Amino acid sequence: MRKVAKTAAGIAVAALGISVLLVPAATAATEAVTATCPSGAFCIQEQNGTILSKNIWYSYGAHNLSGVTGLKYPVNNQTGGAGVAACFDYGGGRCSAVTRQTGRLPLYDFTPINSVVLVR
Image (tube, rainbow, N blue to C red; front, side):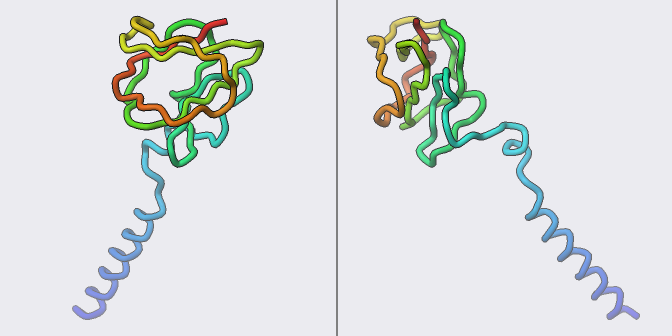
């Protein structure tokens, strides 16, 4: 009887372990990830090619960054010649020159950058 109980408990633990492996992480489930930057947007793309939903912007003006550090690809898919500048301060202060180049730009170190500004 003890042997049957141990076997049943072992199967239950194994099944629980397998189901835990199959459940996606909460952060992955709550934060949509896209592979391309949508038309009309400016995005920050991870080196593995993903773009977190929090790193996609459509509206002109300053956008504060949160948790964006290290080397990443800026992707300018804005239309009509719109540009973007990287800024050291929150709220769009102390910015680089505006770039209007479109598509995926070279790797850029976002560690000292606290905001981006989208301009017409």
